[in-house]
Image (cartoon, rainbow, N blue to C red; front, top):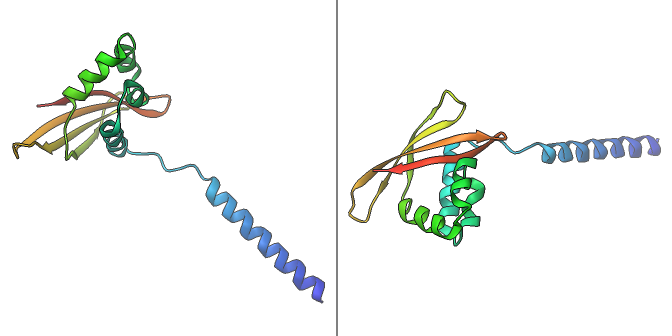
Length: 133
């Protein structure tokens, strides 16, 4: 009788370990375009060189930065240097990408509107265009 209960306990333990392993093996939930862009903004604020930002960029943007990465990085940091970014709208584009509408408050305490276009490349979000007015 003791062998039966030990075997039953072993079976329960094996099943529990198997379920836990399966739960950990689940792929992470796909990011929304907004989540991806906000993770890019975090990386942008910490970036010290072009290589820090290139993984977030669309192929088209990466090609623009490849010939002169230092100059490209300085331009991107200057043009896109915004703080307090809040995405206010996310909409799908016909090509399977996304268009984000965002706002930020500048040092002058005025709100500025921005439009960010993301594309899917290899199933992953990439920044295609970012414009602040």
